[in-house]
Length: 205
Image (cartoon, rainbow, N blue to C red; front, top):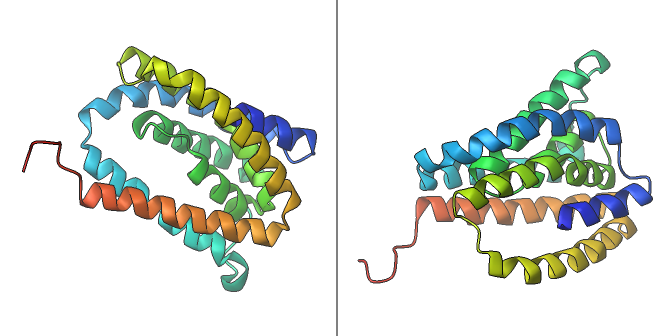
């Protein structure tokens, strides 16, 4: 719901490259359903630690892209293979970790394709729609979703996505990129700490 609303707002404001989103979405759709099943056999702590490290690194690269000159624009002949690889990675994250691959997609668009932050976020939202839907379907069958929480989360998510997207389009590109980088570092740090120091279930020492 949130990704759909966000993609709509960005697209309406010409901040969505549909061919890019489609090339990423195709492999993502395939791998997400498979990865959701694999996650049952992978240690949760290691998954969170690895994801956290990657997201923190991505946030730092995005934050210091201009200062360090680290943007590597993919050449035209390698653009489609690059997007397919990005889609595979996004689908893997969506299925295994259980969250959207947005924290991975947008940095790869910014760093690998030289996109402005708003365009990268619009493409990210649109590209991850199929993987999120497929991952949700698989996790539903695995019993990992609580149906009673869906209506409230959906309503709040749609409203928040509209407001957040409008705010992002209003902000200067550099300011938005720095804010996004800070968000990535905090998010990655959260998963990193969860992986390294997992909470013990209540009643256990």
